[in-house]
Amino acid sequence: MSFSVKPVLTGDRAVLRPFTEDDVPVMAEILDDPEVIRLTGSPTEEFGLDRLRSWYGTRNDQDDRLDLGVVDRATGELVGEVVLYEWDRHNHNCSFRILIGPRGRDRGLGTEATRLIVGHAFEQLGLHRVSLYVFAFNPRARRAYEKAGFVAEGVERQTLLHEGEWIDAVRMSVLAHEWADHRGHPEAVSSTAR
Image (cartoon, rainbow, N blue to C red; front, top):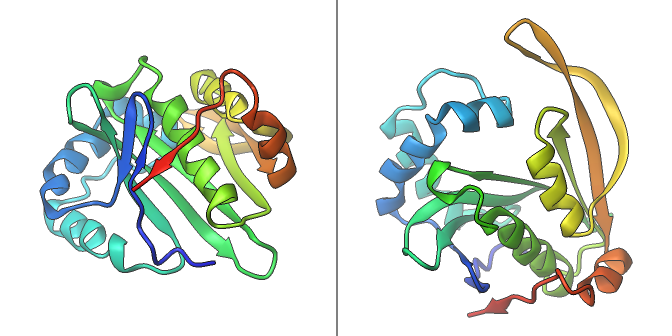
């Protein structure tokens, strides 16, 4: 098992694919979106094009993580990213994160992208567990994760200070056997790797 292969995963609405140099300006715009900043807990400082070029320019060279762009199949437009990271080789698990910019929201792209990457993690990479954190003020993301089989494990209290208020984070995960059971659910999607 290795994250060195960067696949293209195709669903009905979304395509997950490796990043290209042309994606940097689009990702800069997405990362500057106030809703992305709020829901991810990212700092509000500007990332800068040079820093983003350096970051996205090396994603395809990484063998310990998988960063893929999320493309809206209907428009061909890059709308976000999915990432498998913090790979624990010995225990066959990793963390997952996703962000979807304003042009990709409220159309099921995030839900499908989550299912595609989680399916890849279990069916192609042979992982045992995929986990994530979601802030309590992001019920839309939590619903998308639950549709992909993620289960809440606990709450990390007051992990984010947002506009003077402390926000909890919910730890969620899905295990390989849960994914296998969930895959047959009518809402689950199958990915096509190219």
